[in-house]
Image 1: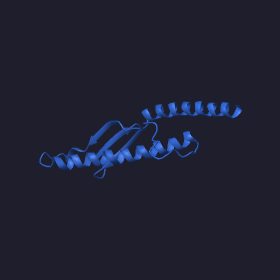
Image 2: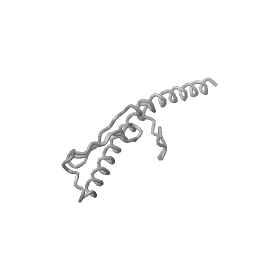
Image 3: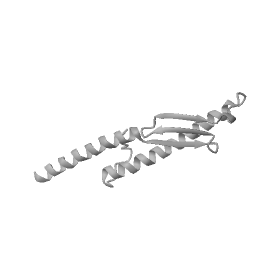
Length: 107
């Protein structure tokens, strides 16, 4: 039973680390950009858009499609960076133990 007690303690420690990581992800801000920085997007660590900045020189009412594409590209750039940061933090929390495929934490 000693091993079970140790395992339960480890599970509790991991839960506490996960809680802390989720709080850190709320406060983490990651920038993504497109169009040589003409459009930038800031996401938090949970992938929620916090800010979008658009250089006024690319705003053309006759070519809204370009602006839309640049926004999508900037969001995707930021999301890729968020995913990398989350994976890095998960490695720290899990102590390097690989999670099963498709098991994405904390969300």
